[in-house]
Figure 1 (spheres, one colour):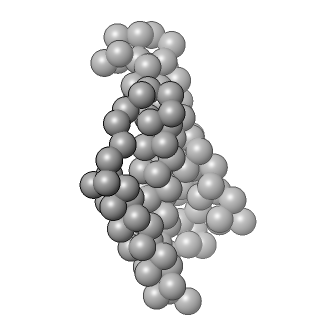
Figure 2: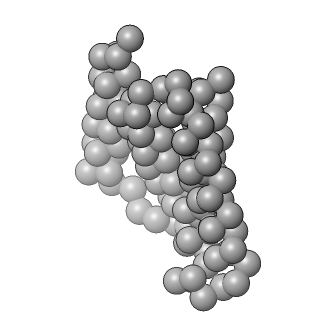
Length: 105
């Protein structure tokens, strides 16, 4: 069940980050409210997930999947650039998370 909560935390963190972008520096009311709600819910799910998942593993997965998701959204919807350095960094993040996950029982 902890993994389901972690997935939900990742989804809400990703939506919260999108709301940061569209809030235009927290100057748009509804996206700013959406950001606060998403991060509040995200941290609630993350805290429940940590009851059964080691904190190092959960946080690594939470942050890595969030980076990958928001980078993809940035490229697809906000027309942010993509280059070899960004791809390499993302691959290294994935490799680190897989290594960390494999190192825990």
